[in-house]
Length: 427
Image (cartoon, rainbow, N blue to C red; front, side):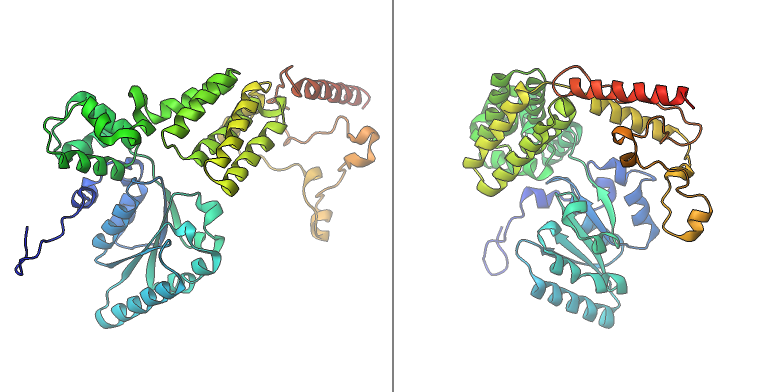
């Protein structure tokens, strides 16, 4: 299409053309945007507040920020932490000040990939967030607990977005109006792996071919190697990471290596695999081989330093190590049991003898009285001492296996329990 001067008007990408115009048009994030849910209530309150939107690519972070500006009749200003610095932040703040003074119009300042800003850049927002000059909305794919400084975090609510479900992606496909058969739909949904933008970009590529209708083999052929990332031979991305995890758990080093290489070859983020491998070390190996966690963390750090392809060998080494390590999920099971107990149990007070007593008043109230300092006891163990709240049974959540290092841990725990029984008998 041409404009009045005969120049071709730019055509918006499909992902932009299908961007929702209202909350009701948003696909996914029902846990935040459904009736009575946190973000829906925030929009309906009429009072904007600063927030961090934490979620994977293509989950709707930018869309929510834009809809927020529309809902509150505010100016939407976007910065990318990749391309912006303190200079751009200051310019955006100055414009927001002028806008408020001249027109009484508020500003929603959206910062994409906020985790890429350093501490001083993040600090630059603080006074203006506190003054209410801007409503800050940061988007990040990384855990804000580690990547966003605490001062900014304390002034912003954190909302966790989830990858779009297969059903969500199927809904987007219908809106895109691409004539496809069921096999093509399944492959496109698998290819997207919860990422709406990735799905719509793929749809746009297929639309530009002019072919109709589109079937599964044509999708594979057109999207070529990138399709392998999430749907080579029909398996979806999370099926492959599941296969890797189960191969490690099953102590099959060769199968573990196969699935690792399959994912790397398909374009999966090596650090995503690294994070999952760290999880395997604590969930499936645990204290049967305490070195496993260090091996996986070292592998991730090595990859971060070397990148691809050199760093991939360190991850492969960690995968093989985990597969051959003795297995135990005893700590994993103990943690889950303890967590469930605490969630259901009442809030029990800390026993006086193990409370902290930094002041004279606390000491006079009995805090820390009769506490037995283990290092002064025989064998460095205060046999028979109780560390649970009063009236709570001494539950044995952690039950070490007889595999690997946990066999020695089991012997140690049995000996400590014997000492406890003897001490209680002698009281």
